[in-house]
Structures are given as structure tokens and as C-alpha cells.
Length: 394
Ligand SMILES: Cc1ncc(COP(=O)(O)O)c(C=O)c1O
Image 1 (cartoon, rainbow, N blue to C red):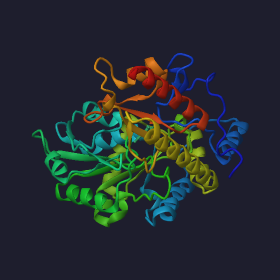
Image 2 (cartoon, helix red, strand yellow):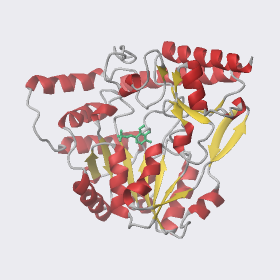
Image 3 (cartoon, rainbow, N blue to C red):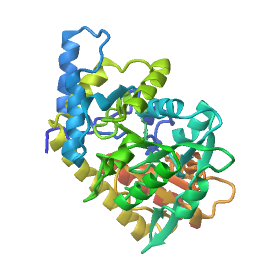
Image 4 (tube, rainbow, N blue to C red):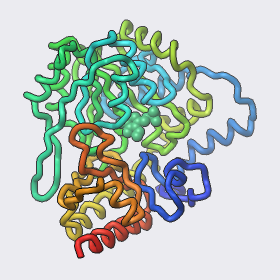
């Protein structure tokens, strides 16, 4: 384990969004960054740049694009040319640019709610129609999971009198933490090919795998699927550098790539030089030991959380996240009438979750919990939740 793999310095007196959004004393387990320091190779590369002291304009170097292509090959056996990799200042910017690039106004954008809230804003940003293939909630052995209902997926394509232009896939999925199987990915990709629908695959959480989970990039399934897909990856969640805003769109098809570049050049422009330096260090392999330790930390947090919920919180149900540091808690059994679960926990427990309603259809009655923190913070939050629930029941 590298020296700073689970260092979690106090953030309360920093400008951190997570720690400043709520009044002092509220435990924040909401926005998706973790409380851990980034790996030392990233920090060292940034320090060296700052010591040089010139922060002029920069473009991604060929070496960085080669490093990302090599990582896809080493992690997934997916061979992509370095020219297929396009740097972008963050993944939200990239999927909005992808929608501009691939759709005409009035076309449909297909998502699978409950969905990461910025997915639900793309339709409004770009003049598209939302088409929802809601994931289907199931309970097995007291744990929740979501599956694709294929009839729902087919019915959502070209629904609302709009031809679907793009399918915005989230895998691993935020907020449920689920990782789609190869069979599911193939089923979705084939339906998209049959219906002439471009796939934009947000795979930002793909390296944050818990336990023995495995990730498959949807584009790696076949050359036809690859030609039809824009894959979005980033070092931001994995190495906890989201404030640097850096991501990569992998677009092997030259025509699709030039459309994406044209749309993104109109709106977005450059990626910051510091983020390019951080990305090179992140994907070089030098941070892999740190990442293994981080996955072990997050897996231990997940296991503690799920075991605690199952043993002591009969009013809350959860998924077993296979990736991410996000847990998705079903609070319907609380039977709150006047309040959302988010408001209840903020007021009664002084714990800030993310509101389930923000995730669209299927989000109501849920909260999202970020367990990317120290065991002390996580346990402190759950103790308060337990006390609030006990007081509400009596
Ligand atoms: C699925 C997903 N996509 C994109 C983002 C944000 O990406 P960025 O900060 O690079 O725009 C997040 C952050 O939580 C996310 O969970």
C-alpha cells in the first residue's frame, strides 16, 4: 500500500463543495468526491509543474493519448489507436457535446433512470426529447438490485414521437453502483445498432471496482459497436481529482470523432494543463498500487455499510454496489408523509445525502450515500441516522 493511499486530511476549512454546502456539524455524504488524498505520483507531477512555474496553454501530448490507449488494452484487451482519444474538460461537458454532435433538435435521448442528474439535463440543453427506459427494481435476499426490462427498453426507443438519436449509458451505474454484464451490454448495443442509435457510454466509474467485479467497455464488444460508440473515461473519480476537470472521449470511428470534435470546439475548448499532467501520472501505471489499496478501502466501507444496514436498519434497504463509492438507499419503509427522506435525514440526523428525486423516475423515496470517506465519518453518519430513526419510531 503506498504511503498516502488512504490519507484523509481535514477538509472542513477548505473550499470543498462537499464540506461547505451545509452548516457546520452536518456530516456530508453527498457529492461524488472522496475524502482521500490523490496518489503521490499525481501530486509529485503537479508539484514539479508548479515549481517550473509557467502555466501557459498546452495541448494533450501524443504520449498521453498513447498512455490512455495502452491502458484500455492492458485493462480490457481493447485495442484503440491513440488518435481515437480526445481530451475533454470533464465528462458532463463531453456528453453534452456528444449530444450536440450526434442529434438533431427534436430527436430523442434514451437514458435508464434512476439516472445521474446531469443526464436528465441534456435534453433541455440540446433541444432533445427525454426517453426513459427505467431500470427494474428487484429484491433478493433482502438486497435490492436493478435489471433491464427489455420490453421497457424497446418501447422507450423512438417513443414520444421522436426518433432516438442517442443512448446515454452509465456503466458502472450511478446511483445504483451496478456493473452491467456482457450479455446486457450486448443486448443494448445490438438494439442501438438495429435502430440506428448512437451510444455514448459514460464509463467514468469503470476503474472503481469493488470486490471481484469486472468492467467491460461496451465499445470493446465488436467492431460494429465500436464504430457506433463514444466512450467517456476519466481519472477524476478513480484518483479523486474531479476538481481538475479532465476526461477523455474514445471515438475510434473517424467521422463520429470529427463530429464530436467540431461540437466540442464550438463550446468547450481546452483542457487545463495541470489536469493533463495529472492524467498522465494517473494512467501511467504508477498509481496502480494506490488504486488497489483504495479499492480495498472502498470495498471494506461498502461491506461494513451493507452489513450494518441489514443487521440494524430494517427500515432502509440497499443495493450491493459492485463499483463506485455510492450506495442507493430505499427509504419507502420509513413512510414519511410530509417530508422527503433527504429532508428528514438532514433535519433529524444532520446528515446530508443526495436527494433521490434528482435522479428522475424511480428516484423518489431514495437517497444516495457517498461512502468514499473514512470509517470514522461513515460510522458517525450511520450512528446519527440510527438515532434519528429510533427517535422517529418512538
Ligand atoms: C456518471 C457520472 N458522470 C459524470 C460525472 C461528472 O464528471 P465531470 O466532473 O468530469 O464532468 C459524474 C460525477 O459524479 C458521474 O457520476
